[in-house]
Image 1 (cartoon, rainbow, N blue to C red):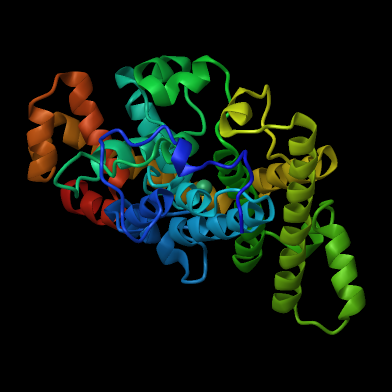
Image 2 (image 1 turned 135 degrees about the vertical axis):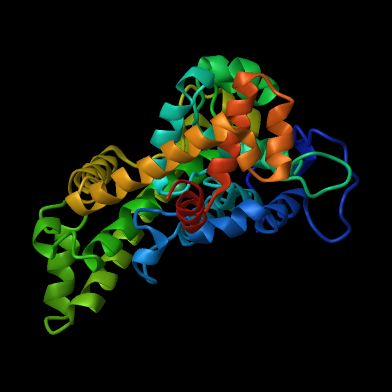
Length: 373
Ligand code: MG
């Protein structure tokens, strides 16, 4: 399948930070994807919370399966729009590498711990993981990914951080967009979690079909599937509804983006970057329904009393681990302790944050038990 002229093309890439020779068998974005899959941070995603802590049940999404679902949604759209599929996949698989244990509860608490030391932001941390923390290659630090992959991973960024990041931060200062593959991975993330969180929420019994029927994305699909298959059992009914919901939103995304691309007429990735606004977006109507569902999940699932119990416990674990390590860096493994000892207070706190952010849920729980419990 030929790529469109506005897709990212390795021939016109802004390249890698450290010069490397090409591969005989793989394209450059394929290599990026493969490096991400071989990274330690990627393997850890299997034991990191998406919404439910991993040990709460075997069937809930983890950060790993979430990332795979994001990649699946994004690749479908990438192929339909003739974008760069391996790049889209690479960004999707890497987008949550910087996530702390315990999902957003962990991220918010670590950010609070880091308030006086520059804060903690999981999206920026994903870039830090691929740029610096994964050290596996003899010739360079990090994974040395292509500019466009890194650009797609860094979804948002404060002006202050953007200034410190050099070329990758420039677009936030110049108010430019990332390439279409980056825009796509970003919206595919939201599509994936909106849908799989409905499934997981129902499975956990924290959401009900009655509540969801009020939702503009869910309700009409529910009526339709009930009408077509009146005897369908609940589990299959839910799968069938969610599959149709994903199809509705993804179809809208493809068609609306096609319209936006036609209207803006970009002829290169630089035209895409310089366009005033993102092109890979849902239509107004579906966007509204998508946001309504997101708000519904925030109110009814992410803030459910059962979730809040987990949140409070997770926050206490992260906070106490941070306090213990910052007071005595020798309680961290040698490599982190050694790195922390060479730093001032701010640098030391960053090393502690890197260590905690890299933990899986179960490792953080065990480690907390061991040193604080
Ligand atoms: Mg995500």
